Image (cartoon, rainbow, N blue to C red; front, top):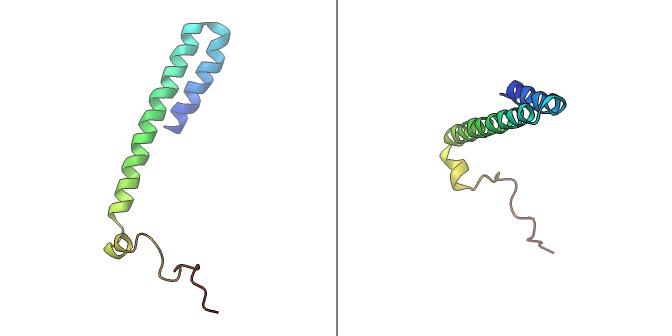
Length: 74
Protein backbone atom coordinates (compact mmCIF):
# COMPACT_ATOMS: atom_id res chain seq x y z
CA UNK A 1 0.00 0.00 0.00
CA UNK A 2 2.88 2.32 0.67
CA UNK A 3 4.09 1.65 -2.86
CA UNK A 4 0.66 2.60 -4.20
CA UNK A 5 0.81 5.87 -2.27
CA UNK A 6 4.22 6.68 -3.75
CA UNK A 7 3.10 5.72 -7.26
CA UNK A 8 -0.01 7.88 -6.96
CA UNK A 9 2.04 10.82 -5.73
CA UNK A 10 4.49 10.41 -8.61
CA UNK A 11 1.57 10.20 -11.03
CA UNK A 12 0.08 13.36 -9.55
CA UNK A 13 3.32 15.34 -9.78
CA UNK A 14 4.26 13.99 -13.21
CA UNK A 15 0.71 14.30 -14.43
CA UNK A 16 0.71 18.03 -13.78
CA UNK A 17 3.15 18.39 -16.69
CA UNK A 18 0.95 16.29 -18.96
CA UNK A 19 -2.68 17.00 -18.17
CA UNK A 20 -4.98 18.02 -15.38
CA UNK A 21 -6.90 14.75 -15.77
CA UNK A 22 -3.79 12.60 -15.32
CA UNK A 23 -2.87 14.57 -12.19
CA UNK A 24 -6.42 14.22 -10.87
CA UNK A 25 -6.31 10.45 -11.47
CA UNK A 26 -3.08 10.31 -9.45
CA UNK A 27 -4.70 12.29 -6.66
CA UNK A 28 -7.67 9.91 -6.58
CA UNK A 29 -5.25 6.96 -6.45
CA UNK A 30 -3.45 8.51 -3.47
CA UNK A 31 -6.77 9.15 -1.75
CA UNK A 32 -7.99 5.57 -2.26
CA UNK A 33 -4.70 4.08 -1.08
CA UNK A 34 -4.70 6.29 2.02
CA UNK A 35 -8.22 5.14 2.94
CA UNK A 36 -7.23 1.49 2.45
CA UNK A 37 -4.10 1.97 4.55
CA UNK A 38 -6.12 3.63 7.32
CA UNK A 39 -8.59 0.75 7.44
CA UNK A 40 -5.76 -1.81 7.58
CA UNK A 41 -4.10 0.05 10.44
CA UNK A 42 -7.42 0.26 12.26
CA UNK A 43 -7.91 -3.51 11.96
CA UNK A 44 -4.34 -4.14 13.09
CA UNK A 45 -4.85 -1.92 16.14
CA UNK A 46 -8.10 -3.67 17.01
CA UNK A 47 -6.37 -7.04 16.74
CA UNK A 48 -3.55 -5.87 19.02
CA UNK A 49 -6.03 -4.56 21.58
CA UNK A 50 -7.77 -7.94 21.56
CA UNK A 51 -4.51 -9.64 22.52
CA UNK A 52 -3.99 -7.56 25.67
CA UNK A 53 -4.54 -9.39 28.96
CA UNK A 54 -7.58 -8.42 31.02
CA UNK A 55 -5.34 -6.85 33.69
CA UNK A 56 -4.20 -4.25 31.15
CA UNK A 57 -7.85 -3.38 30.43
CA UNK A 58 -8.73 -3.10 34.11
CA UNK A 59 -5.75 -0.94 35.03
CA UNK A 60 -6.38 1.43 32.16
CA UNK A 61 -3.07 0.57 30.52
CA UNK A 62 -1.00 1.98 33.41
CA UNK A 63 1.91 0.05 34.80
CA UNK A 64 1.86 -0.70 38.52
CA UNK A 65 5.09 1.27 39.05
CA UNK A 66 3.65 4.34 37.29
CA UNK A 67 1.39 5.38 40.15
CA UNK A 68 0.40 8.95 40.67
CA UNK A 69 3.43 11.11 41.48
CA UNK A 70 1.24 13.96 42.70
CA UNK A 71 1.04 12.50 46.22
CA UNK A 72 4.00 13.85 48.16
CA UNK A 73 4.59 12.70 51.75
CA UNK A 74 6.76 15.32 53.48
